[in-house]
Image 1 (tube, one colour):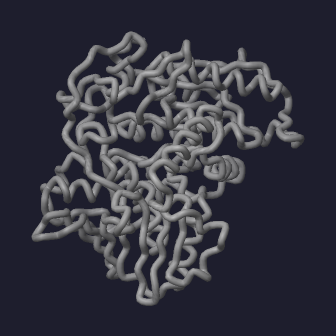
Image 2 (cartoon, one colour):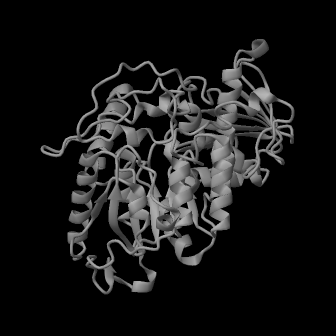
Length: 468
């Protein structure tokens, strides 16, 4: 297949009618993990699409879930597929399995394999829709990283296809599986702080125009395939968009893929952290599957913060939830009887008796700079050995695998991912239009607002030959 025509596989192939890889795959008749025997019928065989830093972290999480087998990886960077292969085969050997992890550049070929039950989609956001849709059509369950989609239309289409094909989908908003956030949601919904009036949700800045200089594409990277459906002529290669690695000696990425910070390729902190903090806020106030009715951008008529207004009267603003630590991502729920603050590893309430000691954690900003730097280095060291880090979230992966087996909804199903992604898109739309945007969450409509209907974050024309 020509690398210049990366999406030309037929629909027949998407539906998994071939059996690539079945004959050569060597597995034991059963697994034993920590002394527990896993029956063949309980095993979940996975392939991974997108093998950058987050994909590697997610593999470490899935590797801790009993019964999971990983047999294939796909990436547009051949060095990253080789890194993944080596890591997976080391893990397989440690379990007493014959090592075998196949490598792909075209994700469609991985989806053809009948032996794969589920896939992880951990590509840049602009690829999430096509990869998830095609995986669902191929009969695979999907763990897709957050945010679910790049545009509103993509989120809507992904939701329809997943449900039409009766697929299990888990979105990587892993805070849903974390105790401090679950407790915060419980306290809000139980009325512990009364009627909620305001929510402060600190996520960070919206995306900015791409300002990276063009650089030579390395031979190991298929940048044309990385671009995929993106059709903006201003996009060009720069190492920050596709962070390089080294195999010999091993050296991981030095930064997260910067594509997320530019409006041509991502949705900024609005989506990167909004897919976590806006997500928890909506869960707590019963807005999963719904959303705000009006979005007012920062700076409009003196508006101090990006603001989301809900039909139930609750107002959520993107602003610091801790006055003395303004950049810390987190949430503050303000009710007529008190408040709740929650962030990763931290939970506090105006009534301290409501917070279990095990979930209270440390308030952001309590550690001095030297101690924070030390802890960060310890986290990085642990990450390199496959331990620690909030990004390594086995409970969220365990929930996905349990749902694959039971066919019950995950804790962060595609309905949740779609509504959260739409909130993030709406925030950036209002910011770019520099005026309020009205949204009907029931009909998912902008009414007569033609400018909103035509906005790139509602829908954009894919680069040929890609089609949504």
